[in-house]
Image 1 (cartoon, rainbow, N blue to C red):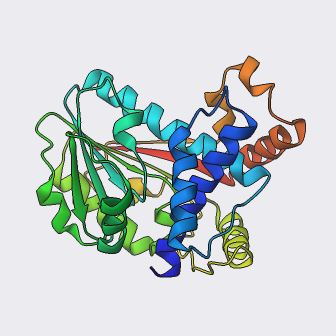
Image 2: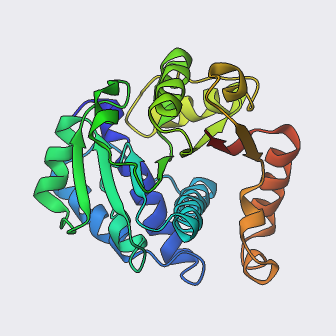
Image 3: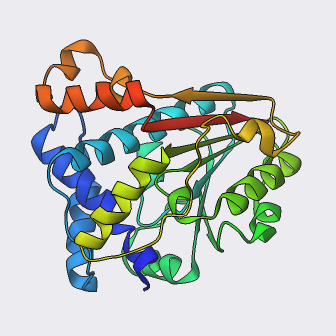
Length: 264
């Protein structure tokens, strides 16, 4: 596995650590199992203590919330997990009627076959997301939502804009949700990856979070959410260290970290 593929372990490390520190906020037994897998696979990735583990826990929580909300109004829809890594989205979405498409590079899908129990409603797509052939493999007759958590950082801007245009053309009425950071924040993330053993370029540096409006005529609406903490009830939010809450306030103010929901 190359360094970009190795980065799939970072969110699992972070989710496991967040689950340990804040079990009421981020119950995540699978992430702990995935840490064992990482050890046996001999990954060079190292856990990121502190604030990053909270970000990983919140990111996973928000993506699952987005999928559940979409499925409430589109029962039986397709859920495409772009850059699925070792996620067990079928477990996260249990109780919802849907078909889950696990999209990732062939070596990552092979890793899933070794370690991840496959649910009846899952279909594996061993493609790069930038190879648009995968779009023809998805049955979106009952709706489709694509989730890209921590994935687009490693893509060129042109690749993401092309994917959004191709997705919208293939699936009018669909939705895509992804997270991103400001160019300055992305540069800091690059330095952190290098420090933690998996140097990888993050070329997706976009100044305007609403850029998808300009990338495709198929886009009907773009919603940007600049505060991850708004997803937590005040009582739950109060469990987090004040220093972390202040960092999120700063990130909200300078638009350093955000989620994008693109409707087609």
